[in-house]
Length: 282
View 1 (cartoon, one colour):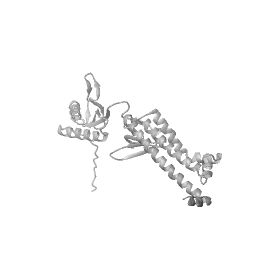
View 2 (spheres, rainbow, N blue to C red):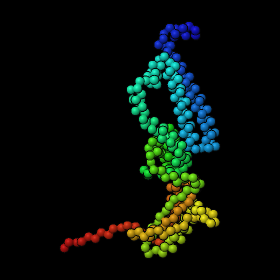
View 3 (cartoon, rainbow, N blue to C red):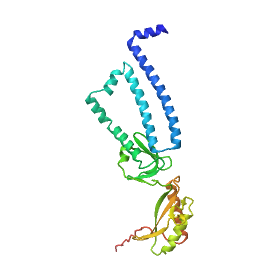
C-alpha cells in the first residue's frame, strides 16, 4: 500500500485527480448525513408548527449545506482551486455576468424571504390568484411556491411572480371557509318560496355548517333576493364549510342539491335561447 501511494505521488496529475475524487466522495457523505439530520430535526419542528416561515428556513439551510460542501471541494483541490478563485473571487466583469445570469434566482430568493416574513398565506391555506389559479398552498422553497389545485394536480409558481400577484386568501385568520353562490330563477317564481327551497337544500348538505355568527351562535347563511336580471330573478347565499373539504366538492354538492330542489318544486331555472325565423320565398 505504501509503495502504491508513493507511485501515485510520483505522478502529480494522477494524485491530484485521486485527491479530488476522495474530496468529492467525502463531501457527498458529509452532505448526505447533514441533510438527513436536518430533515429529522425539521420534521420534529414542523410537526409542532408547520408554517411557511419554517418551511422556507428549511430550504435555506439545505441550500447552505450543499453550497458550503461544493465550495469546500472546489477550494481544497489544486485541480479546481483556480476555477474556484475565478468563480468566487473573480473580476468585476465575471461578477457582473454571474449576477446578471443569476438575476431570476436572486429575485425569487428575495421574494421568498418577503413572502415568508409578510405571510399573506400559510401552508394549508386556500388561495385564489388574479390569473385564475386556485388551490391549497402545499410548500414553499427558495425559488417557488407549490399550490395543489384539483386532486393531485400541483402548480409551481416562482416566488417573484407570486409576490406581484393579487392574492385572495380564503383561509386568512379563520377556522372555517365559505363560498358565495348565486342562483337564477324565472320571473314567475315566488321569491319567498325560492329562498326557502335554496336554504333547505343548503342545510341538508353534509358539507355545509352553521358558520355565520349570530345571536344563538353559528347560523347558516341567509338566502337573499338580490337582483332583477335580464331574464331572471337572482338569489344569493353564502355557504360555510370546514377547511379540510375541497371547495370543488362543496360547489358540486350545493349546485346539484339546489338544482334538484328547484326542479322538484316546479321552479324554473331560465336560460338564454334564440328563435330563428326563416322566410320562405315564393
